[in-house]
Length: 233
Image (tube, rainbow, N blue to C red):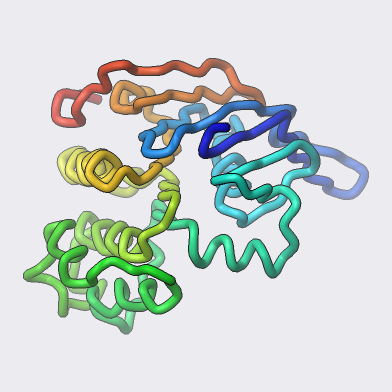
């Protein structure tokens, strides 16, 4: 059995009498330690996949398994525990606590983790040792995103989920962030899932899942993923 399994997963949103299928029956698997890129146009359903995988939403039908646990059958309390201990989130717009320093933002996440990583080492790993005592307002966009990644990593999650992690960043900073994510995956054998509409990033994934109109368009395995440094967009 794979580390992650989606089996015929559907998600239908109801607005009054109207039903809107965000996912129309999605099946795929992800192995432990894989760096996976989920790509597709806006509205294709990739954010819905991420939200279901992270326990922030529940599917309408189908089965979602993560590390042998059936996430699709969890109640609200079990989902909270799952999000707390097993999932690290990196969002497009950082979501940092503004009145806490970079280090305190990272520390916050370790307080809800069973087996957190060392805070100082994690901050150093993302290249922010000299900025640890700065507040978010004193940091650039790229630095804030590094804090967000350090915060997610410090929890030592089973699964790191990244929602357009370079969407708000310039090209050079975006590349640095993606390299950090790719390296983290391979060094710590952490399963990392990145969603993006930037198809150029597909080359860096061990596995690439393309989503179109709520369905899987294609699944490709990259035997030799391209290092981020070599990708142009």
